[in-house]
Image 1: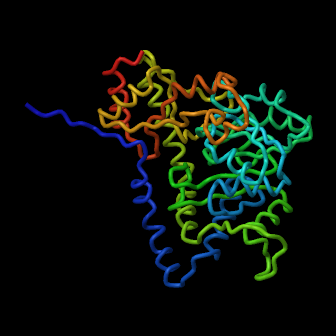
Image 2: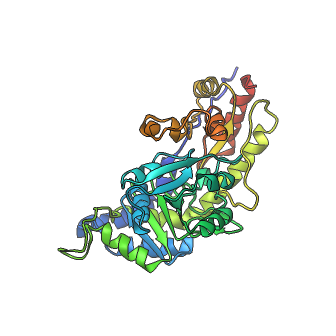
Image 3: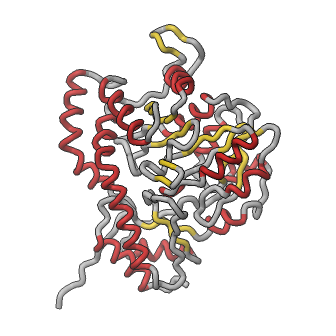
Length: 373
């Protein structure tokens, strides 16, 4: 009698990506090490030009990480101590943390059924101290920038896109990262466009914003040892650039593979009771950074998936107002009902470009064998 083969499915498979780009990257790395070319240089400049062209902005400026990119974006448009910045409560802490680092005050609002910032909640959060709105393109979907920009224009506010999870995403309004005055993104290895370590970028069509960021991120210096201001040190390492260039060339194909995988999940899981599937906002081209379902008894379901060899994660288990880091802002439990209800039920399933149909079938089979509802 033959033994049944058990298919294990990792939550994320970065080794497959690395194997695909190795022949492109390793020769460049070798030459960089021989040349001792580690900071700046032609690879960084080439990536910045290529990424700007891909996004559709005049400038893309590589920095050390996505959190720095957000902080630099806030600083570049004049946000400072005491200014209020409106953002969704269901996001990674970096969106708020970057504001906190410069003394600004995060102001949280609820999300919609797509778990994106709900424009209907934004206007009520505006005060005389509000300086900006920061929509987050979460899970690979583009937030409703048409509505957000209209609100910002009405009240004289700045819009800053947090595009860390949306490289290649778009809506009928345009491509994520090119929909506001300035945008920030992360190239953390697990992103749709990930580096070989930490990295990030800021995108803008505003020459003055670009000039400020390049100067501020280099210790406030454009000419060596001439410092116009006290800045920071946040540069894209040269060794990350060839990784990003190689992956950028494959990004559209990899995003298409993610979309195909999302469609397959939707077919496989459609008839399983108790599993609420994600829905793409009308007009969006989703790049499926994450495939997030909702289930009751999430911890039990996650444990049973793990026992079956299926990787899963939660993005994110706590809305920011319920974290200790932002308890001092005075928000109450129950204040953001959509985000809070979702946080108890959301579960991210394995999603990456090299995910196979066999692996997805194993995920669906694990659900089918457990009582979810």
